[in-house]
Image (cartoon, rainbow, N blue to C red; front, side):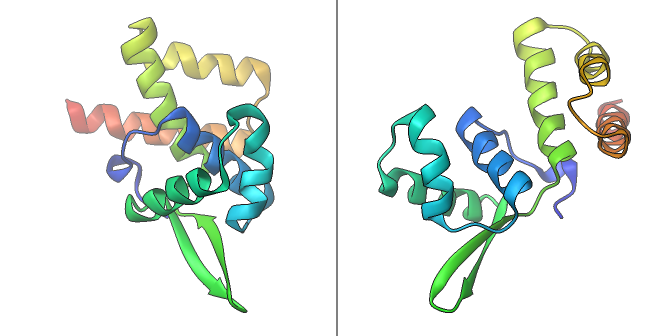
Length: 130
């Protein structure tokens, strides 16, 4: 998995694609597209383009399996959440990331193990910036 400090900014659409892969494991473009077409209304080719760009950004890996491509995430769910938390805390709310993370703890949106990893990633990021 990619280290958190090397993770590029994530768009909402990229996060949603990763969320599908975190939930379901390896998926084809068609499987991801079928889950996204309701919320986004994209054409299949748009989903494929997004996913191929995410491979280039090293957010996911594309593997050939019996003539089809399967995509899997290269970053963990907490690492992806850390990028979204950083963006939301810094640019939207202009508050410390800890305040946003505490919302996850209260909502039980992520497991204790994921919470621990999220906190570790954000702590490392803060130490790097100091």
